[in-house]
Image (cartoon, rainbow, N blue to C red; front, side, top):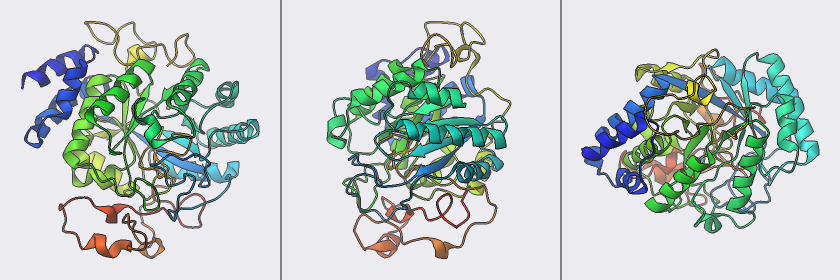
Length: 440
């Protein structure tokens, strides 16, 4: 296919596709999906080889958010049966983080529900960052706390934070349809504040909320312009008890096309396979590793993910390797190691100097795409240790189905592959904030 050949050549030069080319990727047929994956996979291997970076979410404060993000199980008015608790103590968060690090996680993402932190909250999180870094030498820490006020990014940076996450989630034109309590511009400003403070920026999107192809292309091109180091791609988890509970708009093939489009637009950036992958990609998750070079390990913020052991087996079986702590994730040209990463035309997505440099350069999933903070999912990957033994299934609640009280029954009667799998949406009842062992 001429289109794919042209996009591969551009990706190897860090040159973006045109908007029409990006739309054409999304419009390819299911019959061509393996060709699309193979083409985008060449670009992924050029910049990241066969390495997969593991990230681990620790939910510092769960539920009771005053924001009204329609996709989020922690939103104002949500009736989803999620865990609700106030701030974890630094030692509790550090213990939760250690579980993920033991499973191979290179980055720990600290998430808190809410519109944004107070200065007292920032002090609290700073102590948590220090505790985690003291216990886990070399680990990266990303904070996802919501909209930042003046000086807060600098405080987090001073405490040892490496990155800050705040997702754009969807296009500017449609943002008001999913959230009314803050604006798209508020989110952009927070990412820019993090960049100005020398934090590595992590900002991504949520697919599956009823958006058009044009909306998806708009947000990905906006992310390219914003120039984050990491772009989490979340797939909506339609939580029972939220306004988007019945939005089942994704197929595994469409998810792969979306990931491929993101890779072509941001060829040399850490593309993270984030929230909702288990629900929407299902058995095609290994194919997504040819497009994304980063994943969340184990559970999400308020929903359960694939077992950590299964994640590690999937990565190995697909012929990939877990990225070690001593390996730099980004290509040399993005970290100041070289003026240009490849011969050819202008800079690719995010060709700025490394964090702390003069140019601006953050970790989350969706469906749960996060709290007012915008981190991945309100149900995003949660905290869980990399246990080789899974907790008893008796500790899990009934699966969310989009119909209050329906439980797993109706969903589990659906034939495999017959459409959406709401029976895969499981509210988290383990890990940090509980007495049950985490699932990393």
